[in-house]
Length: 424
Image (cartoon, rainbow, N blue to C red; front, side, top):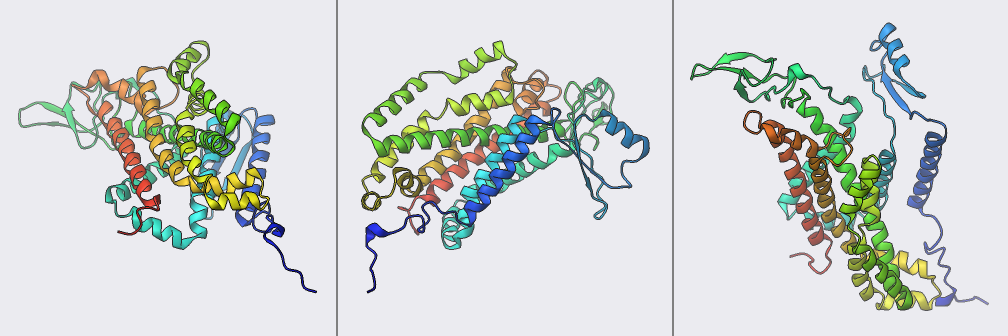
């Protein structure tokens, strides 16, 4: 006699409840690899992992010996003779770098991978998104900034202080020959009979008052901005979503306790707390990200909670509960996906705020002085606006367009992910 399964007999594990999908297996493999390398780096590599890419024709003899002598910690040697590359660099993974790797991985598994698995949904989102041309241009600009910010610092050393090369103008500018201490470019005479110094390709965007190349500072600042914006956003979104959905789903005392804690945390000013901690400890990028990421999610929690409260009353949530699905399964498979539009839109709007905040703190000189931040470069040039305006204006322009780009992107994502808009 054939048996017929009832709704209660459904095995939720087979329906994707607990069993691992292909993406789940990839995430598990990445987590295992990540934790293994992290443990190896933290427990055994006291000086970090040095990465050396070279060709046999590149660094030889005494130069290679000097490099090895100056290198502390194990070195990963990657021969590139097959493609004729000749690059050498070291990468000592910091705590911020490890967090950034997790951030990029989360963005891939929860942002790119679902769209890749659902081309129809991705095409629909793209149709809506591309209606905002400013957002499309912004996405391209931000992608370029992201790639350069990640790859560029691998091949760039921090610019050294070169007093004799201070105030070199960009290649598209000339300044009176009296501005730079020593003009590295051509010296010409303008129509007024004044000798002017022309920029040189050795410093395409000029130098600061300390002789540091603006281009290098820009590239290094791109990584700092991306790390601050993306990692802090991930921490805020993760904690805020967890607290918001939990409070909305369980309600009662759980909701009351969590929301009162949110009220309490909202009364703690992160900015002043960072200043106080900077007084007792050396301010680092990791400290800034951790502080604002762990203490800045209350607004997101409230936003997610308000959205999740509506979802908990939907019939499909009740059906899953009546079928015996666990609370965690319902939150993970029904509540979170249906408030994801709010979460993603909020995330894209949080990023520019954190980038701007880091730049402001660097401008005030209360962040890590060893990190090349856009705000720090702007601050270095604020006293030279009359004679060397490029020092403050060029990083200021990049900061402006990065903030503007994320704002455009956030608005467009909000429109594209809103199912109530549909095709118009």
